[in-house]
Amino acid sequence: MPAFERLRRDGKLRFLGLTAIGDTAALHQVIDARAFDSAQVVYNMLNPSAAAALPAHYPAQDYGRLFDHTTAAGVGVVGIRVLAGGALSGSAERHRLPVRRPSRSARR
Image 1 (tube, rainbow, N blue to C red):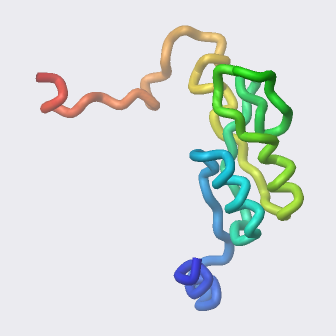
Image 2 (image 1 turned 60 degrees about the horizontal axis):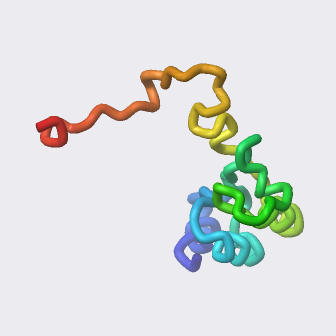
């Protein structure tokens, strides 16, 4: 954080954001520190746990109502994976752009 604060002080960055993927307790701690201005947060119909409590043993990461933390810290949110990686897109076919082609060495 000291390096980012120095960049902000020097006018080289204005806002600081993070992609909120990883350990839920760590995400809460980082957001609660109020060092970031925005967060990209996983939120969709298959995993609404950033906004609502999930039932026990739900088969997805529980983000533990992360939106409560972003709201309290004044952190802006950008929703990511809103179509759950294609599961909610209405099509069984994957779009060609997000599919990475394996490298030549991986095809052998």
